[in-house]
Image (cartoon, rainbow, N blue to C red; front, side):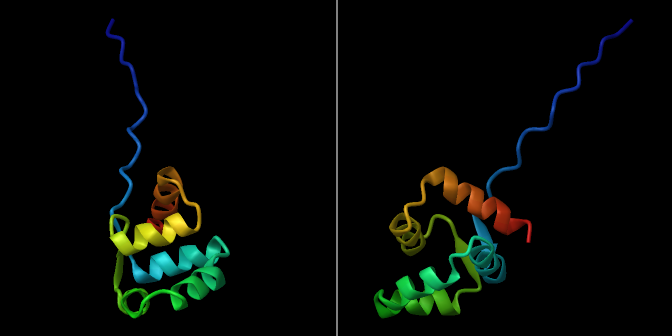
Length: 88
């Protein structure tokens, strides 16, 4: 008799990029839209342009990492945010 061991699938990797729509919808789900938009408006013009005009958001982007840091997000919280956003 052969014993078959079934193991759970490994967790899905955290996506490196989500669409602007996914990113901004996740902000709204997390009730961060107003706070993030206020923060963005206080940043240099290039950050403002990037937020408004980007079609995708990369979790490794320097400006984006600065924004998450400003809101106290740890690396694992950023992972959770991008994973949730990728499912929208």
